Amino acid sequence: GENVEQHPSTLSVQEGDSAVIKCTYSDSASNYFPWYKQELGKRPQLIIDIRSNVGEKKDQRIAVTLNKTAKHFSLHITETQPEDSAVYFCAASMRAGGGADGLTFGKGTHLIIQP
Amino acid sequence: NAGVTQTPKFRILKIGQSMTLQCTQDMNHNYMYWYRQDPGMGLKLIYYSVGAGITDKGEVPNGYNVSRSTTEDFPLRLELAAPSQTSVYFCASSYLPWGSTGELFFGEGSRLTVL
Image (cartoon, rainbow over all chains, first blue to last red; front, top):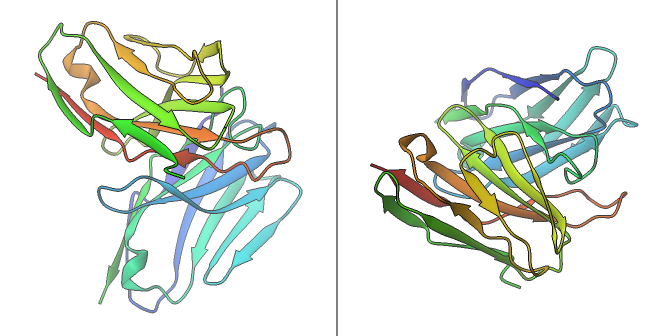
């Protein structure tokens, strides 16, 4: 089955700086890569996703890049703000929404924004 | 719409006891999932369902059972609780078919402790 590795497990950045979280996946058939944000004690929520036919996608301060050849994808957050503090999960799937296998999640990155 | 609703939010069980985590969604989603979240381990898929009357095992199904008698409801049953089942459980749903946004909608989570 799919295996998703996520790094780093903890990332501390100064407010206003950029943050980058990286993930690798094992199954070359995976074609859907979402990122979820989970604030303390809350449910995970989708913040951005990318499909394998696209190399990059942006949404305001958030961007995701995908390198299919190397089987890795990254989340980039620019101009970080205190409300960006949370745990971020990457995931991979062969179907949008998970389909027959559900999503395989990484172990998460705890992003800390220092004032 | 209430989205995905889980009950209870918190529960303490003794070893060997049984219980059911309830999950209901009002978005008419075909796909529903149960994940467990352990500290530093991400989200692991327990069971999923592609529609009423159809369920299948995920990555970590041992010790659990599910049913899907209606589109709305997807309860998770623990028959003989063990300390290893101490975790936070998330129910989720998504709309398919192929080509949809692929977003998973999560419930608020159920924190289960087995002593």
